[in-house]
Amino acid sequence: MILVETNNSRKIAFEILKKVFKNKSFSNILLNDVSKMPISDKFKNLIFAIVHGTITNQILLDHVSRKLIDVKKTNIDIQILLWMSIYQLRFLKTIPQYAVVNESVMIAKSVNHKFSGLLNACLKKVIKNEEELFDFSFKSENQKICIENSFPKNLFNLIEKGYGKDIAEKVAIDSNQKPVISFRVNTLKISENDFFEKYKDEYELEKTEIKNCLISKKAIVKSDAYTSGEITIQDPASILVGNVLNPTKGSKVLDMCSAPGGKLTHLSMIMENTGQVTGFEISENKIKLIEENIKRLDCKNISLKCGDATLINEKENFDFILLDAPCSGFGVLKRKPEIKINNIEINNINNIVNIQEKLLDTAYYNLKQQGVMVYSTCTINPAENQNQIKKFIEKYKDIKIISENQLFGYEMNTDGFYICKMIKE
Image (cartoon, rainbow, N blue to C red; front, top):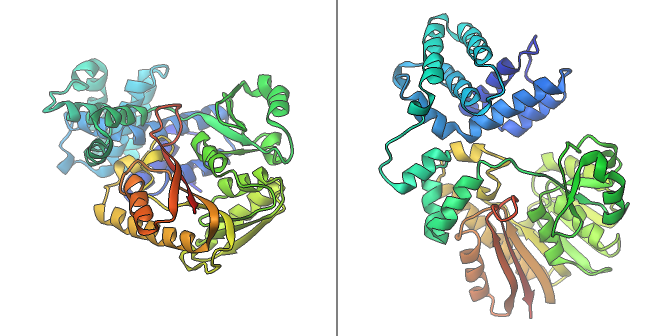
């Protein structure tokens, strides 16, 4: 929990951003602490906006700030404060400019008094010369796309190489969109239509093309509907994964990587609490969260195990297998903008690809003849998706692809997802 003695939204946002940029902390976890603070929703909303907006636009904000300061001579805390202040002046136009400047200067004094004058001068230049400061001479069209959309160049190049420039540009632009509030209706407790009719006005609900997936225009995570287990928060693309596998009632199902439990409980729901769903999760710290979701959603047919899924040894025991594999996560940029500011290590991706390959081998070993499996990731990377499956079906000649779909996220404002359904003939 971030300890502050005041309801100063900018001070709280600044403390969070320091942890994100300096310690590689995750903003969603820190903002979850903010949601529990005894402060008004107005303050909380401003904190969320500043934190998420500054991280999402950091590459652009840094380019602007370099026109104003010498980064080699400027304290990193002051640079972070400058980024979040420029973000407010550029993107949060309903906030009075004097409020942004005054509070930012006060925070600067608490960091290092000698920098407060510099920050004050910089912000006044932004107010006076905003359009000029946000105007750049670009060396290439790709550089323009990356800077204007605060998109990492190496990730743009990876996506362009795999899927083409048009898709890479659309992904870059989409990465700045505000994600929708989507959720899955838990039909173990209420039908999708009944839920929609019951809450459509209160939460301004919208239907989607995806079965049992609705969108809310108002926050719904703290609602009685959520607490009672009528719904669970889940992205439309994530819900699509379970719908594609679509295990039959009474079958034996394996979910190899279960945290946080959205897909696991979805499979249980599809099967109407019949049969047996075995969920594996390697991280002991995540088991409690999964168990809480299982209980809240009233899933009765799940057996949860903590262990390494590559070691599962139940030869041809499962009718259906879901392998929602660990991945680079490039599909969830809208929800986890830190991915934009963390250096993309090719070695790390190679390690992930190797783990995925081992998990696929295990899935094959444990899948029955005529069994069906889905391999999914929340990333946009051929090495982890199409190329991974190409190697898999070349290795195991009795595996046939039923369907293969790459979602980039811009199609319906979802997460980016790869979903491949296969059968072991």
